[in-house]
Image 1 (tube, rainbow, N blue to C red):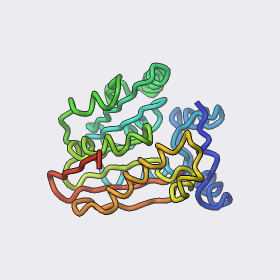
Image 2: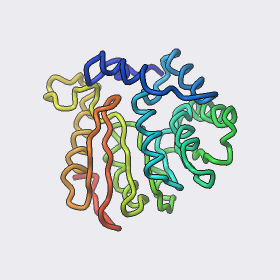
Image 3: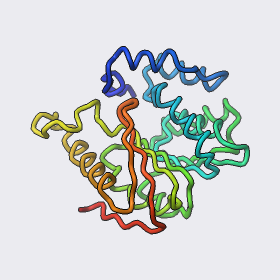
Length: 231
């Protein structure tokens, strides 16, 4: 379950430590879940991303949220706890172990009615959803980002925000592919393809944020945005 990328910061180590220790910690059970996950090396979003996501929820005030990649249910719980009482989070995961952990997290926090967990492959589930969603958080298999992008944009409302995590691959995203370990080359190619599409598409606005292993925020400027993930 441990993620090697979590321990390769893309900004100066002392600044990462400052962001992770000096910003407000989460209170109560949600804070306890974050602390336990970090102690056990469970790959959840780092604290600087936690603070940013919590702040973003307060500014955007989304009511209908979709997450791709529930993991242990931490980030979906964070969003559920940061939005209005009538807001709702739908999240997707395909791993049985993570699904059970996520369910326990929602039970522990009393969020069973505020979070819907869909079990299965995102590639099968996304086409069945209708949306629209005010906010989508994608934090799943990095090589699948370009594949999931057309469905995410279909489901996202005009002016809504798609936030995608871990796009810098521990700072190696710009390295020549010959320097990338063979096991990571497919991810490297497809992440670069994803970034090229979302950063150059005429109907999308995007902003890179160097938190954690890199975030990108994407907004669609038109109701219908055409993307060919096979290009």
